[in-house]
Length: 287
Image 1 (tube, rainbow, N blue to C red):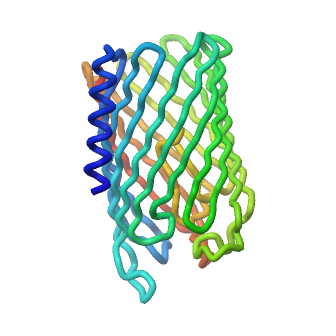
Image 2 (image 1 turned 180 degrees about the horizontal axis):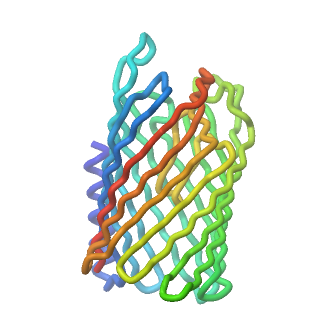
């Protein structure tokens, strides 16, 4: 039922935006294959997603529906495979050459853990110093059944050109506060109250080719990632993330491949050195 509602919402928003003469917009789909090493709970899984990024006038609407299926290691307390459904939404409005506001929403459906039914809301502001540099601050609030989290994201982007290569540098800092870690939640035991993590991303564009690398350092739990379009809602404390990706533009299509490596500790069982490897393929149609 959730999948049907979200797909209908996606189609309604896309149709509304297209009716307002959308410009430089895109439709996208992606597939991910995940493998877990050293985990006591998960073996491997797949993720599917479909979305739209629509620009019109000074507005942007971005919406993604995602579904995941993960094979679990069965035990007396874990008898089913994991199934998740998520909706990601962002609306941004550019007031003038300097200021832009954004609001975010995430909804989660999970058949195994208490983050099922979780609702995440966010709001932020961007300041554009010039065409090359910008700063964004976004505050998120995650409302789960037995605990809440607050996350503050600070992102600095800088664009430049090296010869014929366009390059974008991004620096991201995330502050996460977990409220009521002594609640009856089965997920928060052994978590800290505060986490800070930093990330660096570099994306280059030469003719029709794209290349990107990124890394995150510092612990994080229940983190919102990728500008509000990924969320880690299971009790895993990540302390390392490395990513590399490449892509090519073919007419109105952009094809991308990405490899992501992450290291984590499974909480609350304190199972360390869990490795998560993710292969991701994304296809965008621009219009």
